[in-house]
Length: 442
Image (cartoon, rainbow, N blue to C red; front, side, top):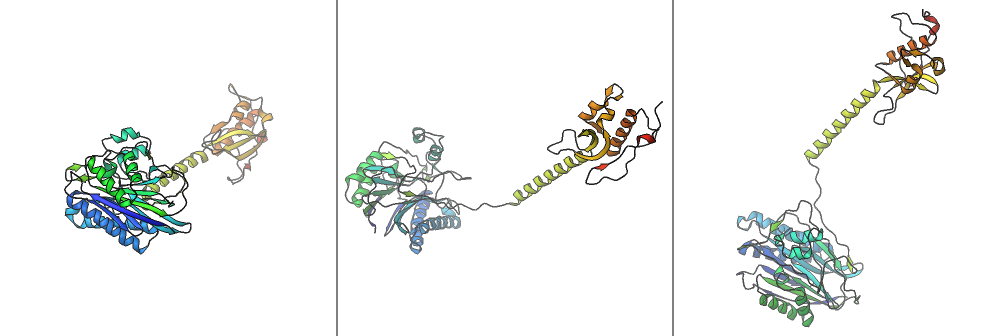
């Protein structure tokens, strides 16, 4: 059995006039939402997301139930923004932790969309569980930007995911073994932007009560400038699994989804600047022991009319090319030699695009009969071995007839064609050349 204790605190800060952050402590469910879209929109989005999350999770208090609850919250915010023009474009971040039962025992399910964060203090070391869904962080995760460059990148404040912007959203999820003595922190970026990780770690370790720890963190953020709304939810594992002593237990599944459209987190004054520092007191999210694999819900791929049309056109072109190649090969003939016998091939000499020539006529004439014959200035035997092209099957037979007559010192009468007793069949036919019927050469 796992026993948890929690506490939370929130403050508007020293710059904003409205607090668009919302915190949730509801039995086994804890969350932080940071709204965006102006004074009205951001507050409405965050409040609706928390309310919908709590209501939907109560219907199915499981890991899958948490994932479905985040999707339900996204849909609720999106529907409200679509139906109310004054709230159009509103959205919110959401980071949630829920205690759930599994076949392997109690687990903490974590879900995240946006740049609100979840940390874990384990054996005195602070580890960041979530990955910010911002342009700068995505570039870091792909190795296109260093952490130092990300801290000053001009697009470090641009989010790539948030609830309520689209009808569906990609959600990062984790399953964590609750180890006795661990302390978890959920916070808005008003804390992580203004307070260095070492100070966050010290504040979490110094306070015994989670409520005192949350209030200390909010106070420290305000003392650092209070440039944004700041919210913290601190969660302690009073009774849980024995501690592993492993301080490297953070993971993430956050990647920039295909087709994701970055959008800014806005306030009444425009884009909100960010400063995401990472120091030696915080572990960067990396796969490790104690975390179970994440699951993501992805939108189904659709087969469109354009895709079908493209495939049909491509298939038609391929068929036409195949038909043209076959016509070209099947209407080509040449005279050659096979096993010492003069034959007629259908196809191209040496083959064409992997299509080998086929013997279609066996003449019954051996190469030895015509080896010494000269036709003009060219020896016949070497020419046959290389192959002699002819425009048609009958003209190939005529060539063999004339060549055989010369080999026997005879000549075919003018206008007389060599016989072809049969029409072509699937097997090579034998067409004897009747040399004695031809008159002797002068």
